[in-house]
Amino acid sequence: MLRSFLQVTAAVGALALVPVASGAMAGVDTSSFKELDTFMEVYSQVKANYVEKVDDATLMKGAIQGMLAALDPHSSYADGLDFDNLKIQTDGNYGGLGLTVTQEDGAVKVVAPTEDTPAARAGMKSGDFITHIDGKFIVGGSLDEAIEKMRGKPGTSVTLTVIRPGADKPLTFTMKREIIVQKPVKWDVKDGVGILNINTFTAQTGADTIKAIQEIDKKLGHKPLGYIVDLRENGGGLLSQAIEVSDIFLSHGEIVSQRGREKTDIERWYADVSEPGIVSVPGDLAKGLPVVVLIDAGTASASEIVAGALQDHHRALVMGVRSFGKGSVQSILPMGPRAALRLTTARYYTPSGRSVQEGGIKPDLLVPQLTDPDYKTRPSIREADLRAHLINNDKVDDSVLEDDQRTDPRFAKTADQLKKEGIDDFQLHYALQTISRLGPKTQVAATRSK
Image (cartoon, rainbow, N blue to C red; front, side, top):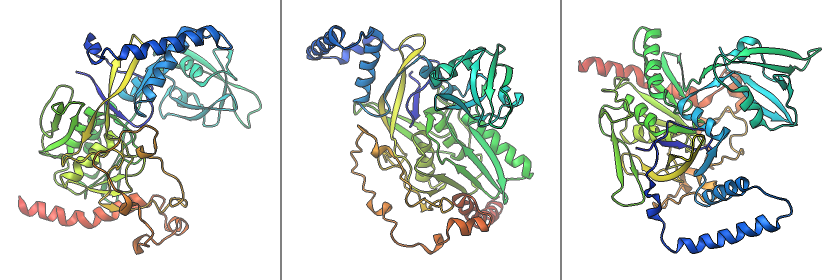
């Protein structure tokens, strides 16, 4: 069975891949070969007459990427570092130093070291500029090459030379690479409410969500008033993990269905039902307590599955602004030892049969992020804005939802006014207030029912 991946960002990295049957050619009819003749004619002309010599690998990769780009924004070809990055997105770990880096004016700049990693323990800081890796000058080179040199087998050493603004001379850091485990779930407790910040859906997300709920209970010594599941800016990830997280809060019913090209090509997943590759969670770990799911324009794909499932089953109040709207499923197909094809193979639907493609998840309660001063004017990019995106055949009309011309008295305060009140995240603050109002009543009702 192919591993399904739901992520809004472009493909970068890899998985434990299952070979695809050679019967793929069955989908190619004889007329396709006429088009291939045209392709070969263009290829020959480029090889013979382009102003500079071009190697076959460059032409083939460009042709593959162009073919996939003509399909939809999420089908792509990943090899080399892109393949490694896809593996990191799905597996949630890699061998390296724990650095997030970017490129600025040709130099590799440290965005931030990850907590409790070799880079953080060595003393590297945000704003450092890496000039040499193992004594080799890297300024002016590509960011991908620098990242590949810093990653590697755990236990091996690497030396970075760094220029730090304000330092008199370059600094040198020699570190041993380790397995860097990304944390897909962070948790907190505020005002008696458990907060689950799920930032991606890697292979550990379901298990880490269960651990987070257990830690919240342990810290409080009892169940919280309720839970906030924060899915804002969560671009997605593994379908299996979206199912597991949904199952944590549901005791029965369908979670999501997946529909392929043919009408009969339908798969369904249910709460409390064990399936290969998916860990079933018996019952509702939240014990019926109030749940608020926070979403925004960056909430996409796998995270929309969770929001849609909990919304359709009336298990959670979905709050925030309309989500991204990526309702397609990508399968990862092996194309060699360090390459893979990421191909859109199905659409997914929420338990009520809704497709979120283009339209996204509409919140039950529209709550703007008032603590962002430019929240009204800042443009948001969603699935419907992407070139060649799949069309939703359900004719989604969001004109009413998008019409926010009327002033809501609940949302009249400015960012400066909220800051003076100590509120730096209005959506989270509003969710906390909502659960505080619902929590005690729900707990009393649950106690009486025992």
